[in-house]
Structures are given as C-alpha cells and as structure tokens.
Image (cartoon, rainbow, N blue to C red; front, side):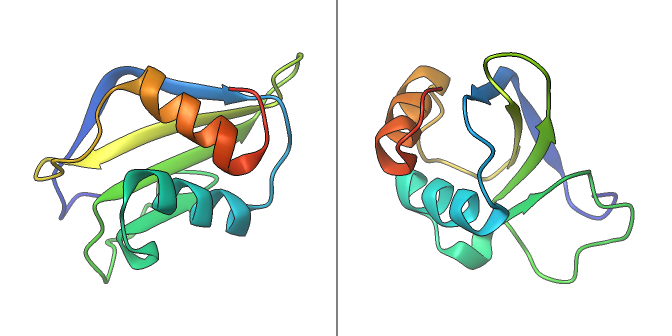
Length: 101
C-alpha cells in the first residue's frame, strides 16, 4: 500500500452473518460495485509488500465472534468514483451473496 494512495471510507466496515469463501466475496463485491475482478483485492490482512497490479478497492476480511461472523473493511483508491454509500453496498451485497449484512 505504500506505493498506492488509498483512503479509508470513514465508518465503512460491513459485517456479514456467514463465513464466505474469498473467491465468492471477491466476485460478489466486484459485481455489486461494477468493477472488474482484477480491480478488487480481497485478503485477510493489509499486504505488507507493494502490489504489482493497480487496484481500485482493497477489502480486508476478518473473522469475528457473534451473530455476524465476518468483518469486511473497505479501502478505496482515491480515484474510485462508484457507489460510496455503505448502506447501499450492504443491501446489494446481501442480495448478491445471499447473506445478511
């Protein structure tokens, strides 16, 4: 991330009620935001090495305890101009992934 400027969307974490595979999350997030899959990186921690390909969105997925078992933290590239409303994104993800957000 040191070579790419990301901005954390203030207050933009989404909790999900299911443990979903990274591939399913990646595809669903890409679809609801209208991004190509290569523009989205879903991982379990912020990479500590520079990324070799440009991306628009980094999503860090962390398992948590409770009714909602997956926490998604969204980090957008400063140039991203798509949907920014967390409530709207959560609604779309719920439908696309068949889960509650």
